[in-house]
Image 1 (cartoon, rainbow over the protein chains, first blue to last red):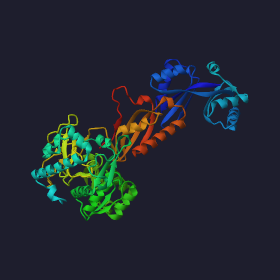
Image 2 (image 1 turned 90 degrees about the horizontal axis):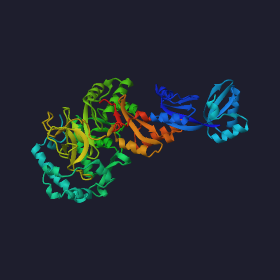
Image 3 (image 1 turned 180 degrees about the horizontal axis):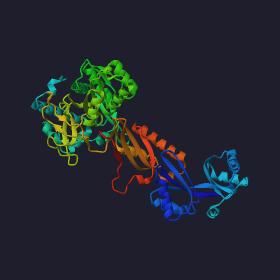
Image 4 (image 1 turned 60 degrees about the horizontal axis):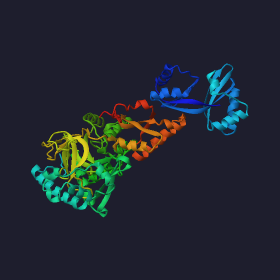
Length: 141
Length: 433
């Protein structure tokens, strides 16, 4: 499924990640998944949260640069070959993966992807019987 | 101590006043009849050229600002037909427009004359080898020094700026005795000389003429110690003529202004009143002999004061203090003039960036560095690192091409640049002069 993801622009210096998490923590926001991409000077914090609009509002109040983007969420058995198969399906039809991260859930893994063309990617994954997971299901994990 | 032009440089001040009065009257006539802009301005104040009878009448005349030059870009204030102009220079200005200046053959000759005085002030003569490490081109530094050097008969080495290794090698191999460049570059060269491993004894350098950016007494001492030379402060601005407007002599107690060509006043930048002798204020120049671009009461924005006391060197020309700062927000980075508004206009052209920015000026290894911190617009923050990097590089390129300065761009979070406290602090200058 295509689900919303919260992205936060951060300068690459100590304490900034803490600041974001404290803002969210104060309001007891649950974080389903989290990933950080960084360069030497700045980074992007990516979060999957149950209510991204609320989290965005909280962070904006504190003047963070926040955006909501769309990513794909898929469940596969937690083994490398399944991850590889998924990526192969996409590369075979020339869809590139801009970034991806994953987290385990029991014997499965939830994989988050952002592709050059999310809609085409979802179609291809569906056609190959991959199990896409909705926001509703993610919340219940 | 040698003096290039004893007749004028040591002229009795009463006599000088007569010369200044005569020349002002001629200048005012010239601009009234040849520059519509000045004629209108004078007519608005009910002034005809006949009202200006001596230098004392100068304060009746209106001021000229950089904005006036910009409004008349490029040649609107020239007082001669373009066929009489033999040289055009330009310096950086806001919103991409340069400040353009033009010289007639006589202006070039005047410029060479005042530069000859400057170099003689620094103890140079025809036996010297002058290494000119100021930039050549539209910037007046290189060619200004060049013509002065030739005028005194010195051997001029027009090496221009940059390429430090070659500077050192030529200084050594040709036996340069006088160095002309910005003071920060002089310090940089001093370090490079040390690193080259060549002993100081193998160099013949004895003096340097340094200008185009502000520097302090501490910096002078450092340059003099490290290079083992006499470091002379020179002053000028392209609008007035370029380098050569004023120069220290070997006494090093203020810069002698070539008053027979450029008449100085000190004003209060707020009230625009002329201040009494010795008070610090904004330096204003009226050109007395220029033909191409005569300027009346041109506001330099440089803060200093004048000293009419007799100098030990014998020159009677008034001395100005080292410039103590600016009455506007202009920055001088590696000798290049930069207004924060120029940066702002580049930012405004890019929709991906908010014009919330901060400029951080510093000096690392004696070279000015400039960093621009800027906020990303949320609408364009699309969570891809590559996109942000591309944006950063694009901004860096745009700044380089429109300002001619390498500026390091950093993308920052909005909070960093406080905007709540009224006037935003746009510039942080960490340089210690």
